Amino acid sequence: RDVNTGVNNQVVAYRPKPGEKPKKHIVEPKETLFALSKKYGKTVEELKAYNGLPNDQISIGQELIVGYTAAPA
Image (cartoon, rainbow, N blue to C red; front, side, top):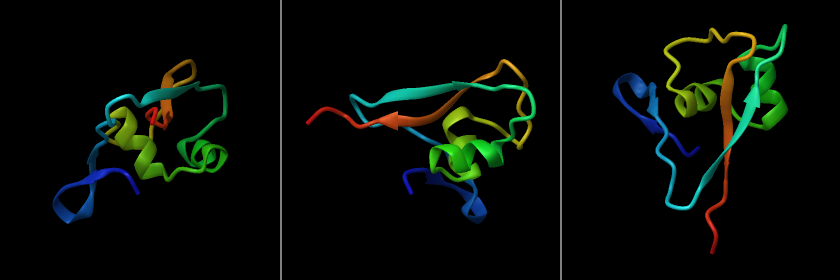
């Protein structure tokens, strides 16, 4: 997948390619990173990397990046 890994193969951060735009999602009650990963076809680790999250905790009303649009050709 398209994330950078560091020590022990842990996700460190995602750096968008030039021209990519983030797709965003506002967290609603009872949503989890796992559920959002399934909804958007990403892994939990990818979502954490997109958002700089140190763990799996998210909050209601939090805006999360759930992917990126492709850069124009």
